[in-house]
Length: 83
Image (cartoon, rainbow, N blue to C red):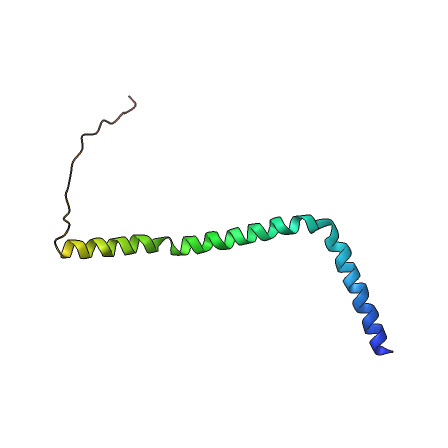
């Protein structure tokens, strides 16, 4: 008897959940896509500093080995101002 009641409650619950989700089923792929895009964007933000760090290390090594050198340049600039 107890198992029957539990089985009936479970079936009713599953039916209610199915009825509640059915109108929104077409939005599930879009929601999953937005969630995955957000996760990938967060991962990209976390690791975006890595290429800069690697390039700085490579350039520092090349400069220390006298393969490259730093050159300072000045450029003539024209600036517009409001009078």
